[in-house]
Structure formats: structure tokens, C-alpha cells
Image 1 (cartoon, helix red, strand yellow):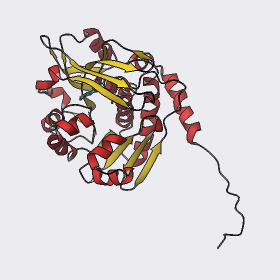
Image 2 (cartoon, rainbow, N blue to C red; image 1 turned 120 degrees about the horizontal axis):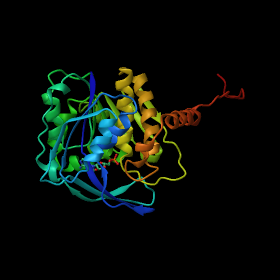
Image 3 (cartoon, rainbow, N blue to C red; image 1 turned 90 degrees about the vertical axis):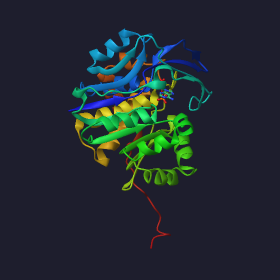
Image 4 (cartoon, rainbow, N blue to C red; image 1 turned 45 degrees about the horizontal axis):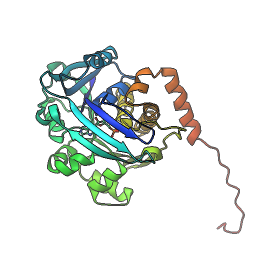
Amino acid sequence: MSLIVVGSMAFDAIETPFGKSDKIVGGAATYIAWSASNFTRSINQVSVVGGDFPKEELKMLEARGVNMEGVQIKEKEKSFFWSGKYHMDMNTRDTLDTQLNVLANFNPVLPDSYQDCEFLMLGNLVPAVQMAVIDQLKKRPKLVVMDTMNFWMETAMDDLEKVLKKVDVLMINDSEARQLSAQYSLVKAANTIMKMGPKFLVIKKGEHGALLFHEDGVFYAPALPLEDVFDPTGAGDTFAGGFIGHIARTKDISFANMKTGIIVGSALASFCVEKFGTTRLKELKHRELEGRIQQFKELVNFDIELLLNDSNAE
Ligand code: AMP
């Protein structure tokens, strides 16, 4: 019984108002695996890298219980490369460059040992590749969660719509929800998107937290107000990894447990942004995570006693 994580493993070059990184290791599946491995040691990774991707990075993830059998290494090719520049608010960014390289012709082959999959996390990747993984699974997982981005809405919308029909939970940010639904109101956007396939929708709002929509209601998780945000890259993937890691660990796919998953994801994302790339996730201690979950509890927990006058009483 395991969790499959699908997504890019990549090099990123990041510019923020506070600094600039050279090519550093990133990619959606990299962040997801680091984050989810806080909860489960049974992660099966699906991705592709070039010969330039540091083998040491794969080994570090293996040491965390991440199985790399489904990660293809194309020795003669280059890894996926993404470069982005953050605006002053650190909530918005421009993509400066996307070089698909090995991702351009990626044909995922699911090892037999991956078949016993209970939870499937489709990280940001070519929608056709996400679909190819779903199609290779002989048994439908208990929960399929998907992340995607505007890039795929603009370049592969038909394929994206097909994958959406197959997933249970979709995670996107607010501008992507608006783009996908052609609705400005996030409530209307959520209703439109949930008609496209997913029964649950998570809308991420950066430093303003995340919303979890379901036909039974909506839940809001704040982001922890942080003094310094150094690099938001990977925060969404780290959030996804924390969410699916918690769900895989508890094996509970109820709306109530998804609410907890959203808080866990938010707590992990709050660490990710403290340093460039995956640095902070690599050094994270469990007692630090427990402390931050406590901070989240205190952030949203309050007692209230309403003292009303009588004039409007019925
Ligand atoms: P996030 O900040 O959570 O949205 O994710 C950032 C990560 O997504 C970076 O490490 C990139 O390598 C990766 N990424 C960016 N664009 C794409 C894309 N089009 N397909 C797959 N991964 C991408």
C-alpha cells in the first residue's frame, strides 16, 4: 500500500527582491516527496531527469523512503529547467523561462511494484503524462489528487480537461482557478470547476492561505504570518506533499480529515519559503513541525461571548 508521486524533478533559477539563485534543484515532485516523507516511508516516485541531475539528490530522497524505480534517468539529455522572478509582494511571479528538455518526450513506465497504490499525487506535469500514469494503474487508487498550472491551461487544455474527469481533489492557485473557470468569484469558480470532475477543490492564495471546497461546505486555512519570506518556490508543492502525506498516513479521506491535511500542508509550506529551494525542508525537524502546528492552532482558535443589546431582539 503506497503513495505514488508524479511530477517534475528539475533545475530552477529564481529571482526574488531579496536575492537570486543559480540553477538549484527543484521540481514539483521533488518538493512533494520531501514534504510527504515526513509522514510516510512508502513513496513511489514517477519522474524523469537528465544526466545533469545530481545523483546525490536522488540518494537523499531514497534515504527518506522514496523509491526511485519509476524515475527515468536520460543520461544524454538535460533536465527540465524553469526560471521565475517574484514581484515585491512575493505572492505573484513571472515565469521567465520553461525548457521542457527531458519532459518533452517523457513516457512514464509504471514499475509493477507501484501497482499496489492507495494514494496518487499527480504533481504539476504535462497533463498527458499525468493521464498515462492513471491509465497504467490496474486498480483505481482510493484518492487521486492533482496539481496543475496556467502553463498547461494555455498549452494543453484538452488533455487537462480529460485528466480533471479522473481526479478527486484538484489543487490550484486563485488566478489559475479564475482562468480555468472563467469566473472571477472564487465561489462561482469552485462550483464550475467541481463540475469538471474533482469533488474537492483546494484554492491556494499564497500568503492569504487556502480554501477547501466541497459540496458539503467550505473550509479556510490561513497561512502563518511570517516575518520573512525568502523564496516561495515550491510552497504549493510542499503544501500538496503535506496534505497527501497526512492523508496517506491516516488513510482517512473524509472532508474532516482533509481539513487537517490542509493545515498540515500550510505548516510545511511555511517552512519551505524560509530558504531557497528545498534547503529548509531537508533540515526540518519533527519537533519544529509540531511547534508550527501549535502556532496554527493558536492563530485560528478563539473564544467568543457575544454581548448584544436587546433592541434588535425578536
Ligand atoms: P510551486 O512554486 O509550488 O508552484 O512550484 C514550483 C516548481 O514547479 C518549480 O520547482 C518548478 O521546477 C516546477 N515547475 C514550474 N513550471 C512547471 C511546469 N510547466 N511543469 C512542471 N513543473 C513545473
